[in-house]
Length: 250
Image 1: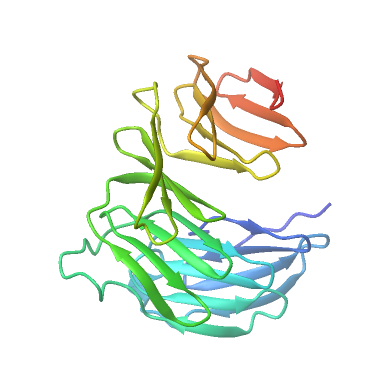
Image 2 (image 1 turned 90 degrees about the horizontal axis):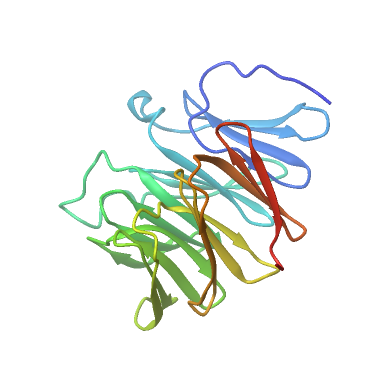
């Protein structure tokens, strides 16, 4: 076990791989730690104005790369082991004159070197991080969250409707209305089960398969702090220290 004090403020999510842990902190610094020893493996200072150092950011990973997404500036791609910057692209706000420059990242995913990002101002961008090219941009989207699974993108919109499109957003494969009127955009994908779990802080839990069928739905009427999944077991953590374990197979 190890413990390390990080000076400064962490400004993004934490990414953990099999051997390393990655963070982005203020002053535009990305750091990688050995997950067993806590030793700093590498760090990289981003080439940004100090005014953007604490802006909304997102870290993603593939098997080989770490991807840094800035809410209104650039995408950086690093090798995970050495921290070498291999790609940089300024996608930012060049694609819409009416974008909100204070927009934050609602959700971002990477799948087969393609980056999908949903912004709070309604933009949804699909981007090839290795070819440095934008595949698709949609403005004024009504989505709260999404997940990419094989050949479709599954969205949850602001009316609590699940919608599944093909990868180019040309064809709607299916849509399903959630019976919960206050479903927030907290999503976990269970790849071995091909199930998607949505939950909100007020206690609603919905299991949805990748064909749009609602398999399980329950409102525990308790405030949910977090959920975790491993080996068919889902752990739900409630704010008043009562926890629930149940099997996904049941």
